[in-house]
Amino acid sequence: MPRSETFTLYKGRKEGLASTYMGHIEKEYEIVSDEIEEGIRVIKLKEKDLAERTKMQEEIVDAIMEKLGEEGKMLREILRDTMKDYEPSSIKRMYNKAVLGKVPIRKGRGCYYISIGDGRKKNSEIIRIRP
Image (cartoon, rainbow, N blue to C red; front, side, top):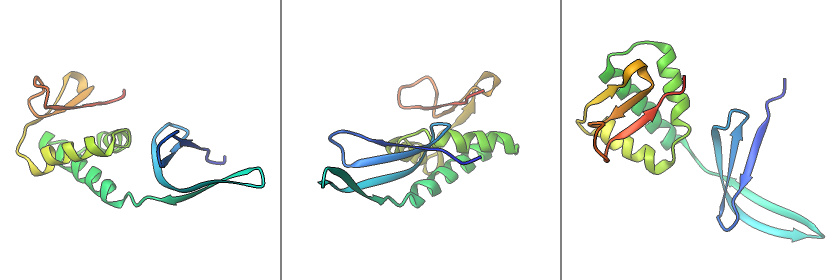
């Protein structure tokens, strides 16, 4: 079965996003040029390097698993999958708190969410786990 991909361009922004059939963003692009040549719109893209963000996401997942005392592969995979839904600014905040900071990390009832920080305060990060 061929793998499908959805590509999104945002009006007024110089970026594009490619996502899987599940809706997770896999690639990001910078729009280098947007021209019309002989009645055909030609958009040139440059793929952004997401290696640093991917590394941060892995370190967040490792920190969460360690602080929760979990060893299950399923929760690790769910967290990896969930991390793809967060914007770069959210990833940086979570990284600063979970990896660099000394804040508590707890799971909610039934493990439907994980809180980085107190959980009752606005500056806490809540990761919703999809059942």
